[in-house]
Image 1 (cartoon, rainbow over the protein chains, first blue to last red):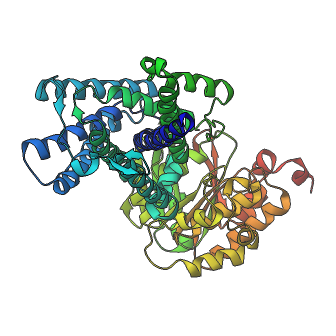
Image 2: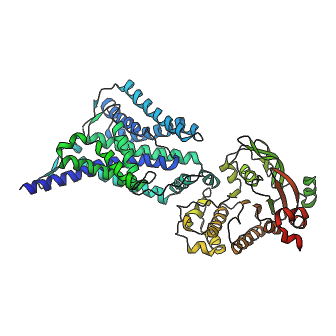
Image 3: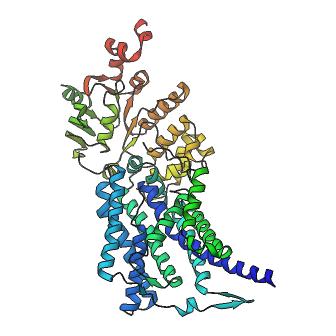
Length: 301
Length: 251
């Protein structure tokens, strides 16, 4: 009986880990794509995620728009936000030292957090409930929230679409070319700025979907909600090998599973939930400095 | 003087005309006011030692480095200040020094990306390039980074051809290649030229370059010091001494 209980709990936790991991993966992809093409850690990415959550909150709870309209508008606005950030804060610094770019990213991050606090107040807002997504259902004595199943499915579909775009389409080919060599890509007639904008658009769209799903699972929005997930997903991208999309997915899943399972098996360690990401990061980087799927670093000439 | 002579010989205005081009990198003047012309349908070569400013000149033509002053016209249109992509769109392409194939892309993808601006069917062009370089067809699905230096050079040339350029510029295509491979590359250059492609070639291998060139310029520390037909320069004593090695002097 005790074993049976453990097994059930374990299965439930596995599903939970999978859904948390998929969310991390969705956000981590944004970090890894931007890094791949600009060699920049986009510190504002977690805050783009936060803004997407607010867009959805306003659409549904304030403007009473239907959820599907809100989702489309949210994704559109978030893409626009990502593109604008690149345009305003990163593009003028394209030829500047990388450190300046990094500082600019941190600046954008603080700016978004403070603008959000100013405009939306620092108080957490209740995210609208999606009963369809949160009412538990039961299979053989196991209870699941539908959202925990929907998240991995949506994430899987989006990631497959992304890999298709990167590997099979013309713009994907251009992205891979720009990621290795700006000058030669220009000689092919590739418009670098357009490719970089597309990269930001895709990364931000994934963060927007991530934010919507995140808020269905954890229904509250606040201006600093992007900080910890942002940091963890950055870590996920590094664990997987930053610059590598599959690596970001792997890193996200590893992080999600380890967090959830650690709390499930060692409830006493619940308070250390957020620390595990860093512990895994340190261990993996000690043995594989380029991450799990990362290539040996070749300096860009 | 040179320009008048050129006009006299060929009787038309050149496809590419560079006048008084100056390029500086962080205070160091790499190109100090050169004049150069490339007539349509010809092979023109620019020879000179390392650091003479040859690559800088080519990179300035496609605006990968900014020119300080001067003018570069293509069929009479000013190129200075245009985006690289716009210049490429006009039908000028550069095979960069060191090949610069995209290492993570397959051979086939590298060819396709060469035709990035084209919207028509590429199959015939790809088949043509595979006909010229059968090695590339064998390695079609291999990542370009796994190719040998010679194969990468073939790929870089093939990739440049995919945009159907009118003016093909090549930066040291023979660098680091075995003599047999170099001969192969030069045979291709001549074949492309016979089909009507105009070629501007930069070489340290002056001997090879002068043999294929209709017209040649010698660049020394940012200035053009000599110009003439390939044959004239091959026979020039000072060129022999500086660029062709002693064995030629003794012949």
